[in-house]
Length: 448
Image (cartoon, rainbow, N blue to C red; front, side, top):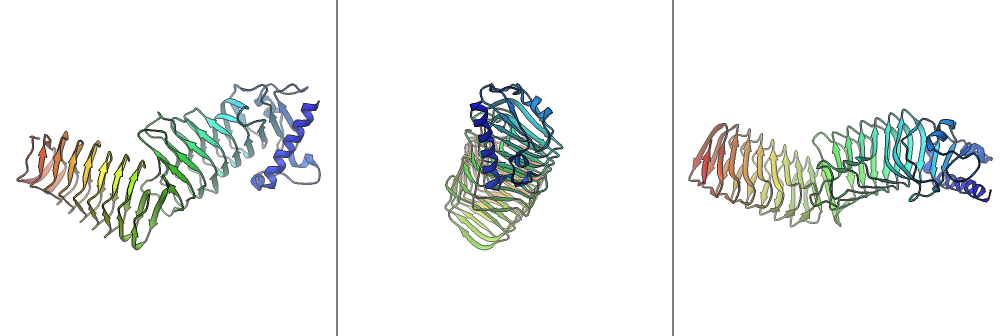
């Protein structure tokens, strides 16, 4: 009896605290003088009280909208997959010791709270007004998967050891809020891993979270795919960073840090200098100078999109998936940069100058695709594939040195490019289709 009374007080205290903090605003309680109107009935799972349920699912089946289900840790772990089909408050006794070894699923459900558990995976689909707060979510392919939901809150959880994504948000378009979480990648997981992946998601706020990669080959902290009008602010990225896909516009990204340095995200800015950053994004910018940065362990060190007349000079970029990525941009100069273990990509660009850069120990060196009239000269590339030109015209490849690469220069469906005075040591020239001119360049072998 003492234990039951203690737990009654604990549950009421938790609910009162959440309501007082404003966290429970989405739950349709009518707060009146009586306790019952605040929390409905309490159904107990586990423990030793008379009439307690032995499984969480059975308690949910017997509950009514507005009820609380309190789960003791005495009978933990609960080896069951749970379908929540009521507007309930689902509360564990202790976050670390009340374990659900299985999936918690919500489909077409509203007004649910889940708190104080260790859970494998939570899936939300076509649901709204859902709050997941103060849980440990571990050891599955996903931590939280959200599909076509609105008005959800994912707050103060530890999400770790997922194979694919910590949180995945797909086709969700209204007032999602993700805050105060710590999301840590496992050391070995899918090459597509992201702490948070957003695809076709809008009006989501991701704020005050910590993202940590434990991998030798890092992957995304937050990946934004074809998503708009989201806010990403005050997050901490450690050995990971932001990944932004084409088609993701009008996002509000500010006051984040990467490895203790600012994540610089500029959109529509002219005449600015950047000399302190852990990751840089320039979208629709003009005449921005980025220099003397040391960037490492992010998905892409420096990104340019629809940007022109910028100078990217004397930066050291290492251990990134891509060192520099330039798309739909023109008349920029990339000079004297050092890329270690990461490549340089330029696509759909024109009249850019890439000169005096060093690339080494990466799978690919400089990749040019769907480009015209760019100039590559005096670059030094070693221990990787060298210069690859795809579906591009009228580019000049002059006085570059490529050493110890499987391919020195490769052309595929490339027309009227000039290959002049390059030195390729122990490298091949690989020609697949197109029209080209080679002048005073040396190769181990020309392969057609």
